[in-house]
Image 1 (cartoon, rainbow over the protein chains, first blue to last red):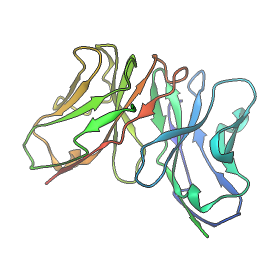
Image 2: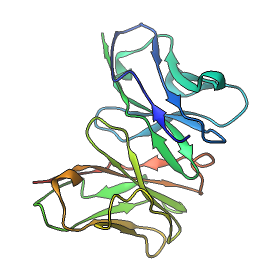
Image 3: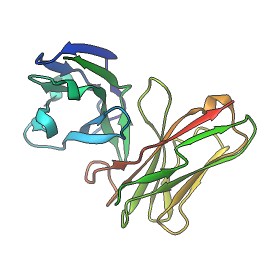
Length: 111
Length: 116
């Protein structure tokens, strides 16, 4: 990916609500896409990744993302969020060996 | 245990001073990456190494920034004559092989640099 954009900067949800965070990338050859999460006080960790094959990717903690090539999108979803999902979420694509990150989405979940 | 460690965790320095930020990758990891994250932004690539060789330094903003990894393990990012615009979180990551698409990058806790 040559660039990655996230349009939701701050999302506020109640527990049990469904989540979808948008991510779009610009075409740059072979596309590998990632979602990283940073919980409060912790470091960035990988949630899930797409390399090829099945466009629906499942990650940890019930998260999934769908790669839609025609829309250049890789949106993150979770059917029912929990308070513990409060964190900052970053979409990223790779450009040769380095990761290109979006600006991040801050998710707040209230009980 | 070992995850990626970085030191110091916080650094406050006066404008014009030099700073050195250290990254200790996961043992045996071949590749090491430096990113910078300004407030409200995502991490931005600075440079990376495979073993001791610096493969790409295209993200270093200017010649005040340099990095080394002399023995293929610990890396140091040095900023000379710091400026206020250098204030950011500096993140290090390591992976067991080259290629962001093939090998997961594991991130350290970051160093928060504040230039006053």
